[in-house]
Image 1 (cartoon, rainbow, N blue to C red):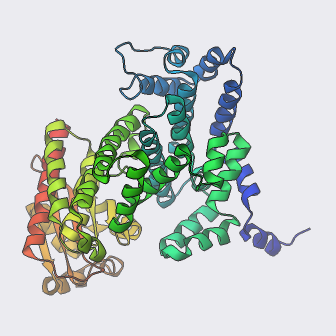
Image 2: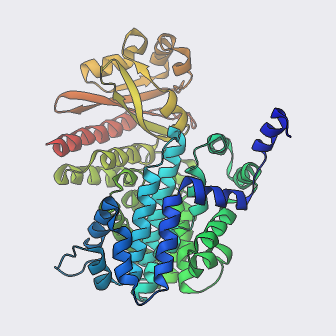
Length: 495
């Protein structure tokens, strides 16, 4: 019999791909696992598959509703006739298409409803799901001149390409929390080693194990085990994953982005410029399809392709190498998007994302975020943070609106933006609690209240804590302009 110390030591040892495959399949997301297996079994029964497909989801009203919304969306339903049953949708669109819509709907609903995760791990899971969903849409787009069945097969393979990683983060135990903290501190070169040390396997090997265990199809297994194979579908899945990964990074790596765009364009047979337009159109469709699936929470994490494509077209390499200089191309792109948001009454999360993208990569800040007023209006609490140390700021940058947070209190009460330079900051830091003062850039920062119909909802914050570049009046004006447009956008969306 093991002693307590030995048991604890065994729990901390890496378990390997077999252990995690069984745990994820049987304990963490068994509903998704059983749905996938049932659908794969039906796919082999040509005679009765359509009838059985309708029967297999009838008991799940939410799933049925999602399937029908997607089946009737502009992406799938090209005619005017709406379908009202899953069986009818399968007849109109084909069994393979409806099967993949079922798998996608079940995956998104199962993981969005995951319980017992810390906020940091849940945010990581949401971002990874958004990346997988976007990659699936990119893969489908890259195979536009192939038959529908192959496009759908590539879509589902891309969606599940990182299923091992997605499954692990849904576990919600001490190991996922520990790895999350380790990866935040790890540099790019040590990420793989850190994952292997904690799990006893790689995320790719775990995805392979789940793909085989669930019977997810030959195309997914091939794309995971032989990504260099030159067939169009395997190449599209790999490039779509790379494109989603680089376009969703907090700060764009322009040389890598250009390389992926060029390779993807060559694969599709168009120029990089033509492919950029396809990416823009696909990103817009992805936003709409996410809402059709009832996965609006992913919208905040889906890529803001417009600004990044414009930066790609402008080829402003110096900016992306330094990462801390104003970029007027991105500023103007975000100003246009926010102006359009005023007209179209865009949702809160999208407007917030567009504003922060403009501040981080347009004004050229190292980090920025939105802090919202608490219900009692006595403190500011971080809602969304971008850039350096964003997770730390989201946990800890809580400002009490009293004498200790004087500059923030003044900004809220007077509805005024503040450029706090190094000289003014010295007196400000002495008032703030030590834990909060340590988070603030000692060179200065900018704040601006989010004012909606003459009422302050929160404050936008930005600084250059990494580059330590001086904040200029031009930076401040660009920052304030974006925040003002955000306020106008929120006002129209609330009417």
